[in-house]
Length: 412
Image (cartoon, rainbow, N blue to C red; front, side):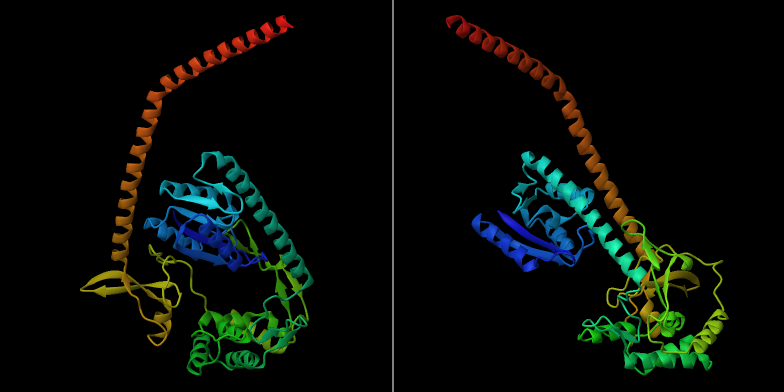
């Protein structure tokens, strides 16, 4: 039997991926399995189904490379019961069974359906209960004013839990405030920081972890966020966002946030910060009306730098058309990324082809379902007749047993 090994570990669990993998390899060796591949997800919740390792497994399934998927237990595949059940059914449609090594359960055995269902309910409850406890702990730390991720310009000493000033970044913050108050625009400040190669907030965090930073650049938004951050006058705001459901995060009104003064050592004076806020308030804001919403706005992402694509109107041979291009390239040029330009009509054609393919597939599936329903409908009278015969047989056997008992009692 050809098998694929899948492992997963969330951030809260103490086990190791290597231990899971060893358990699966041992099972495969004991049962004479041929391991055709493996994938895993480390530090990802089982309630999240957008996982790289799971995607690799799905791609291998489409290529027909395996007969079964080995997991340590069904919670490794997922903890959301609905999504996990759907994924297991999808695997079964491809004639692939899921074998839980430590639970001795197999999705390919009908006798294990009840056990798998019970495990699914338990895994789902565990994930939701754990999530509630984690959120409660986070909320308590927010109320107490504990700083988990210091703002750019500070770093947290893990040994003492104290927030210290990060001098190189602090100098950059101070220069941004002073340059803006001296009359430089946000765009001018952004260009200067990129031209001089100043470390960005993301790069600085990477360096403080002792790792090598990836190429990055300053943006208009990152500069504006620094100028608006009250951390630089010592004020900490927590509970800024709240999760509503699994994928919905909403901002919390400022009067419902937790405010802690003197949480940081100030980098700028209150007078300087207030003057900057007054100038920011005078910044012209783009009117939200008369905007054209393009079909693929917010849906495309650069495969190289990860930035979203922006829509650009261009005129070609007297005709206006919409193109999408990498935002990094659009704002900073080819020194930072390539254009990756694509025309909107090409995207429309690709979507139309995909919809047509899905429609044809759906029609085919519906035909199969209707065929099965008709077949079952034709078999129903035969099954009812068989049930009636079996019931008569049961009555006959009960009478025979009763007769045998009466005969034995008469002998006594």
